[in-house]
Image 1 (cartoon, rainbow, N blue to C red):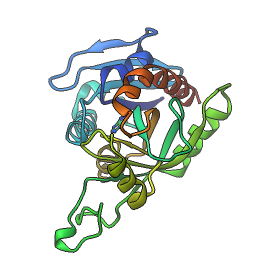
Image 2: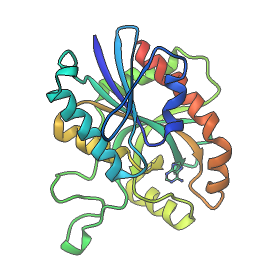
Image 3: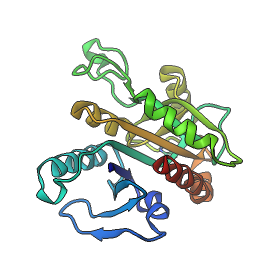
Image 4: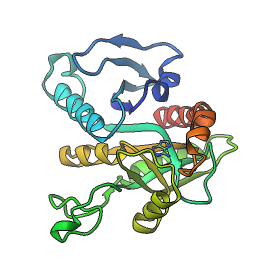
Length: 239
Ligand code: ADE
């Protein structure tokens, strides 16, 4: 049996996945979670809260818990997934489209004052954390098996502790990191997973275009975007 840990920053990003039943809600000191199986995959589904710090704390909490707690002695995490919404940076993307992050970076990491490249944390040797190719291919295969009216693309996702809603910030992220989408957690999950040598996947549905209309668009499209994403993630789990 495989074990996937699935994390959304907000409750609404994971609720559609667990709402069909078969999940037990378990208390936890920091991150209550849903526990249930789909086919031969054990799922642990939880909410980190918004931002890179919250996501890093959540990922490390579960990795350590699952290594140390007798309640999880049967489980070894095979994959950690972050699912949720994102703002589009690439102009080809529309609300409802899905971006699979093949590379993750932090657009607000800036140690240039000490001579380092923008986006580089000097404790690491690259601006980008790369998703295992097998994981990206697994998502593409799942998408091909679905009848959809949205586009799936693979590309860089840039994370930062900012909701992007201005032309200047959006252009900075596009020109500096060539990102397809921006959000607020994925790269921190990627960093913690890399430190722990655990495969990860950051997969996001577009709710807005990270521009002046983003606050309105986000409210209008997030539910539909999450619906597309939930169907795809369920298909990934099935495979
Ligand atoms: N999540 C969804 N839209 C976003 C945006 N525009 N900026 C950051 N995170 C987001």
